[in-house]
Image (cartoon, rainbow, N blue to C red):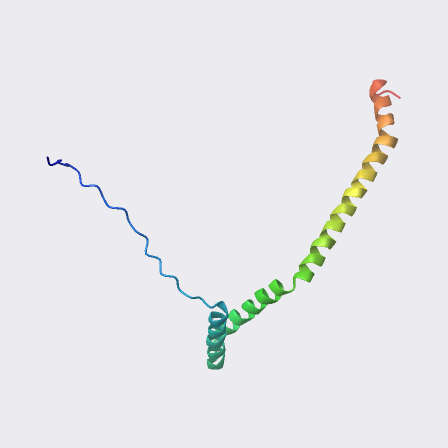
Length: 109
């Protein structure tokens, strides 16, 4: 007995992955060579690109500079917070009783 089908079911799709080798050092070297060639030709855009790339590379390599900056920023923040706590305590200890007294007496001295 033949079974009649009204709809044809699609077959599963297979993923055809072909791995490719990627050498980031080779790509970086080729990019630098292209920049050098453009520099030899006197292209001002190539000079700008080279300077910006060097800035990015230098900042990424020097992690100690960033750590020092973050530590300094955190110490400044901690100092400001300590000063605010001290001033708040002094305000509460010195001026709050006077304010409470004047409010309690109806503001008349």
